[in-house]
Image (tube, rainbow, N blue to C red; front, side, top):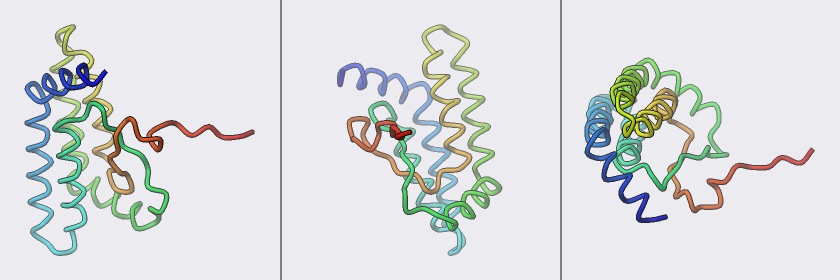
Length: 138
């Protein structure tokens, strides 16, 4: 299983990950210009690491994230999220042209949703018990 993740990550890095991580890093640098937007820059750098090597890792919600994260996500959406999401969708569509690229294109579409509202989420290993879906008792 780890060998498959490694191969997928290498292909991802070559075809999409490097450029998308570069976009996140650029957005992070822009966010560091103003002191108020530094938390967005930190989130952007965290996501840059995630999109660089995503297979075998996932995002989970932070339970202690509340109203500040929601307000931050609205600001993030306006300042950078929508543009990065457009980049994910465009890259995803380009990758879906070939049969081999369809899984990577689909991953880009899913990452576009993450790019719209990244605050209040944490990157964890897929093997982490927190990454498993929560079953609710009825």
